[in-house]
Length: 117
View 1 (tube, rainbow, N blue to C red):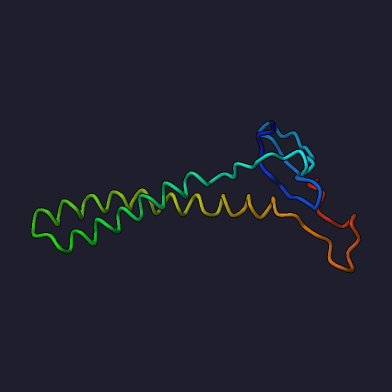
View 2 (cartoon, rainbow, N blue to C red):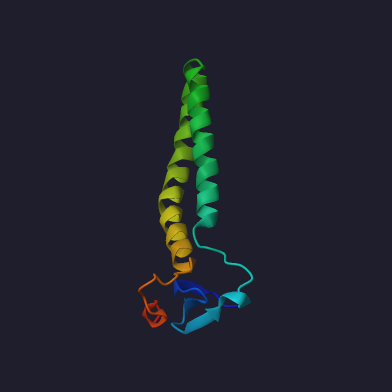
């Protein structure tokens, strides 16, 4: 198992750099799965944000103290959920994009593909 960041890829390999700075070219056929960074933050951020919005909607139907309490819970939930989405989304997107195979265009020679170097 290699734990590292996917720098780029081509149709047959992923180019990965570990935390120690070592670079590897990993054949796609050897890849069992990819745990993209940011995925857990997206799940937790989505749950917290949906909960916060639901609490805000519920607060509108309550009177004085109930509305205040629900509003405070909603604010807390949203103050966690939204930053998680802001941080996790770009991390996940960058990793998925780097892992996507790059196919040569009709006029491009295969040697012109990213090599991860």
